[in-house]
Length: 254
Image (cartoon, rainbow, N blue to C red):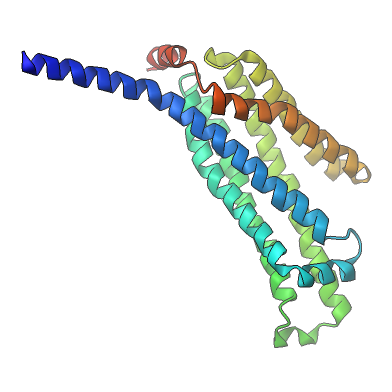
């Protein structure tokens, strides 16, 4: 009798854990989405617009040297972003694998490629720190040459961001399709993610083909990201996932 009671108790505990698992994963994904949005907004938005003066290398170097701590804080913000992204990739793959293992893997790989490029892109910022460090070996360069090199690496950072944006656009497109077909997320979230994917692709390819409209592309990607990605992050954080439907899809795909 005691053995039967203990077994039933263990089964109930196992079921509660199973119910919480997809919900817990979804809420963690929502938190990480918001963390990424905040940190990337700070590092790519605030820090760059505060310190970098487009086309003016001397003013840019002066700003960086006067607020080096802010520049370094931007690097930390970028690092938090790509470290959070690694965990987020694994969670999204686990949540959407019941819909399609192949497409979930494709979405994960596309986002992982983006993350690798984000990490490598920080080398451009490290080069900037070396150039403004005042090291004795840099005296072979004239001040104007040093300033031009600083602006070169800062501009290179933006171009690498456009490249990883193509991977992210692909990821959002596949992710949107998976969310739309899942049955345990609202279909509208999937549609909005597909819209966001086109925003990133327009920004990247548009800047490569017609760079004179870069401000327009930036507005498009910001608007579509807010409309497409933020609803998903809040849904994951607040509503999480329909566990019964998730279990049903998981059993069907097993």
